[in-house]
Length: 500
Ligand SMILES: *Cc1c(COP(=O)(O)O)cnc(C)c1O
Ligand SMILES: [Zn+2]
Image (cartoon, rainbow, N blue to C red):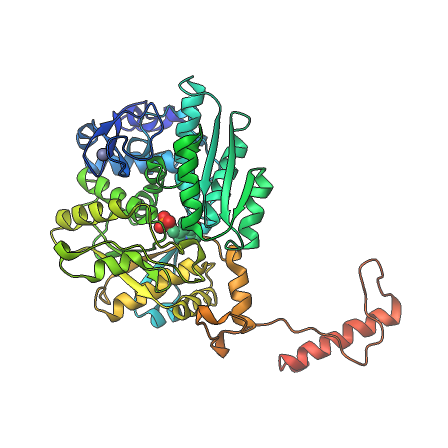
């Protein structure tokens, strides 16, 4: 639909103008810093930052019911800048003019209901939200669209020269960063640091294909992160990890979409996300809080963060029930199939602590929970989900395993409805499925396949069949007929089919 065809009351809100007064706010000392320069930590105290809109009050003047209409009508626009996460422009990056917004097809990922058998196994109604259907096949595109749109704006308006963007990654951040940077070349180029042999071949192929400079570093993600922080501190590079608060803003779109997809009714809803560096759960809490404060939703959904026991520093922190006695201790990670979340010292931990406290206080009761799951449960639930028509990655399996745990622990009741985050596409982590099917997991993963979940291809090559076709060497005549007949017979036998 064209802008002039929308109802009168919507038209003034349809295409947002540049607005808002965004600042970086330090979570340590509370200092406020301007956004003209890219900052990742507070120059005064070194703590992480969140971006805050000092003019947020203006958004509360628009009634919640009108916001609903604005977002629903924006769905009909054909303008690229409004098709992705910036449908929620006022909440994500109001200082960025629509012309500078980069849209590569991110956001608005499908919310798919679990079928009857799977709901039965999980013990409740739930949906997967398939963030693997983003352009680089993970949710990281949400944050990258935001960070790169802002950088694009800085470059286009002459506030910055050309930029070299760097990130450390467990695979998906670098895939997303490289993709968006490739689109914005030559003014923006990217270099990514990956822990050597700790990303899947599919993930490694992504930044290589996008033309990024790719560096493999000995160690694990936490080691790469230290190198990237050193680079950002001492050299003229832009850091694209979720330490960059612009990433968080973009990832808030995940919450906004859930709200919109459920007609803004968040009563008895449970949102389940895996935690690695903790940027995503930060964004999910922040997003729902903003929609709550502006009256767009009138209930804060329950949020459950899930970690593997092989990398669970956040869960361990919250295991201490008394907030006054909690103390954050980084952990040494063990190998995990939820490889993108294999992080022992999450950069966003201070943000989580801050926002979980605000979230629970605003809700008037505990609404943020953390559960730990085993590697075995992650694999079993991923494969079970996919056997029921989903495309969950290992982290999607981790989320579902976490939901089931939360049900068992009484954190979630039968009458609630969950939205489970499959943060990436199953194909990125196909290697773990292969290891499961071949019972080839190295000891330290502690995964034993459930025989009922194993699936393998069967090679059909009957011994009595002398000639078979090969590429460039087709069969003809009686040879070909015999081939077709014999293979069909063998398949029919295997499948117990009787001739009609
Ligand atoms: C990055 C990532 C995570 C972890 O998200 P954080 O924001 O680091 O907590 C989980 N799953 C996938 C597929 C990821 O790429
Ligand atoms: Zn500070």
